[in-house]
Amino acid sequence: MTDFSSLNNADILVTGHTGFTGSWVCHALKSLGARVHGLALPTATNPAMFTLTEVEGLLESHILGDIGDAALVLETVQRLQPRAILHLAAQPLVLDSYADPVGTFRTNVLGTLHVLEAARLTPSVQGIVAITTDKVYANDGLGLSFTEHAPLGGHDPYAASKAAAEMAIMGYRASLPSWQRAMVIEAARGGNIIGGGDWSAHRLIPDYARAIASGQPLSIRFPHATRPWQHVLSLVHGYFILLERILSGTATGTGEAWNFGPELDDCISVEAMLHRLGTYWHAIETPREPSLLHEAKTLSIDSTKAKQRLGWQSCMSLDEALSATAGWYQTALRNPENLTKLTQNQIAAYFARL
Image (cartoon, rainbow, N blue to C red; front, top):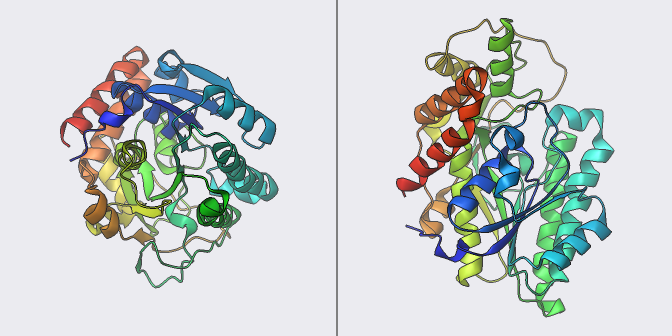
C-alpha cells in the first residue's frame, strides 16, 4: 500500500491539465494535499471537464500555453520550481493524427523533449512521470500481451509519435549520468481509459454520450477490436505511485517504463463494451461504419512488473468502471452543478480502497 505522503504540500507541475485525464489528476492531487500547477492549451472541447468540475480553482497556478514552445516551457518550469512534473500534454487522438501528422509529432515528440530539457535545467525537479500509451508497441497482430521490453513501433502517426517520444525519454534517461544530473524519468504506458468527463471527438464513450443526448445511433468502425479498458482513476493511481517514489527518493536508478493495464478478462471488444455499458445506461443502435484506417484487432499489455514491484492493482473492475462512468455522464446531462462533488466522491471512493 502507498500512502502518498510525499505528495502532501509538494509543488507538482501537470502538463495537459485542462484535458480529461489532467482534470482528474488535478482533483486527485489536490485531495492528497499537493500544490498543483498547470501548463496546457485552453480546453479543446465544449463542454469540458476542466470547466464543469471547476479545476482552475484547485490550482496554485494556471498557465495557458503550448508545450511546442520551448522558451515558454523552460520559463514556466524555472519560475515555478516544481519538485516533480507529470507530463500528460499530448495530441491524443488517432484520427486527428491522420489529419495533422506533423502537428501530432510536434506536440508528442518535440513537446516531450521541451519538458525533458526544462526539467534537466531546473535543479528543483526530482523527476518526471511521462505518460505515453499502450499503442507504443509494434503490434504484430498475434494477440500477445506486451511487456515493457517488447519492441516499439506504430502503424499510425499517433502511435508512431508516442513511440518516438519514448525513444527521446530513453535517450535523456541514459544521458543523465553524463550530465551529472540526479533526476528520475519514468514512462507510464496505460490501456484504454474510460471515465466521466471525456468529451473528445472520435472516442467511444463520449460518442456514446452524444448519441444518447441527440437520440441518434452510434456508428462504430471496428466493433470486434479488443482493447484493455480501465477507469481513468486506475491509471491516476499508477501515476501517483511513480510520483511518490520520485519524491520519497525510493525510485530505482534514473527511471524506467511501466505498463498499467487491466486484467485480461477486462480486455473485451468494442461491441461487448457497448453492450455492457448499455446495462448501466440504455442500449442504442450501433451500425458499423466502414473505414480504410489501420486498426489492430487485439491490444493488451502485461502489467506484471507494476503489480510485483510497485504494488499497483486497479481497484475498480470493468463493471464498476462502467457504472461510475455512466453515472458521471448521466449527472452531466441532468444535474451538471453536481459534477464537482461527484468527481471528488468517486476519487475518494477509489483511494479509500487502497
